[in-house]
Image (tube, rainbow, N blue to C red; front, side, top):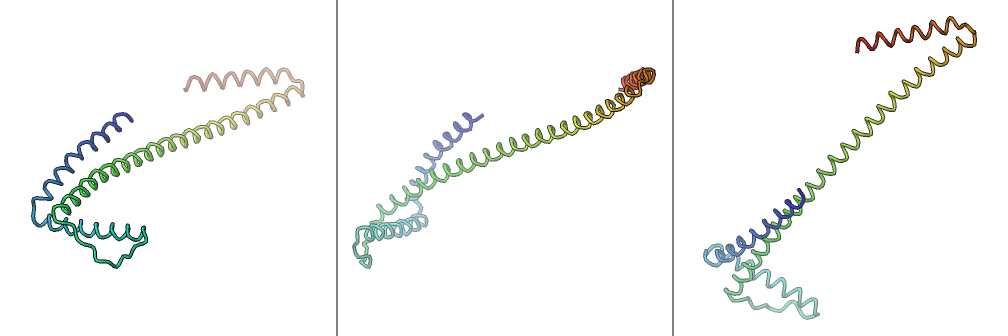
Length: 169
């Protein structure tokens, strides 16, 4: 089961790559979507440039020249394609974690049921031991009285009870 699931995840990631490439192509063709991704790419470019300037200790209050439209479309389309691939991979990981958690929960439930069955068996054995102790004590009392006749009668009554219970089961 696990190899098939991993193979399915790999296939899903492989399928998502052409979808991401198609989104890149479509992003450059539709005017409204193109304007949206250009503004997104420009904001991402300004953010990245400011972060780099801070890391290198340079001034951040400088005006940053915008990228030309084709570079912005290319950068946004690339970012969009990577976003699709990482989203699919992330969803596959989430699915795998949830599947694993459900499997562990089933195993834990099975362990609990086994423990409960063992407890029940222990309780039944305790009752049987108590019953046997009572019978042993009764036999010891009979032996102490040295009434062999009573002892024989006791064994006969036990045999009769076992015979009756065997017939009804």
